[in-house]
Amino acid sequence: MRSEADLVGHWRDLLAQHAAASCALEKELQGRHSIGLSEFECLDRLVDADCESYRMSDLATDIHLSQSALSRAVARLERDGLVTRGMCTDDRRAIFVCVTDRGRLLHAAAAPTHRAVLADTLH
Image (cartoon, rainbow, N blue to C red):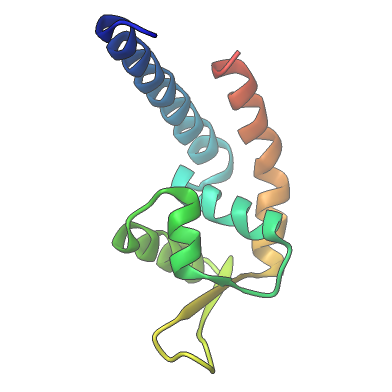
């Protein structure tokens, strides 16, 4: 069993690694592809899901964003023509998001940058 100091140290190491990777990803994605990390993560999940639509509440859980943060990210993606949003016909409270062809193209261009930064920062 780990000591309390080891546990806290491990937690702080994880936080530092997350911060370093997030900052590097944000800088490279924004600089090279004009997309923020949250927006890229949305596109990445949508492309990986390979489905017609993704429920917003599921997307929020999967990328660890609050509903309001996700809503802002999706609004930016929608404004740029990278995703569309629509209401569920069966449940009017549910909103679905779908990646567009333009979103797929941007994702294809940005994904190698994303993966390279992960490889560099998470060695």
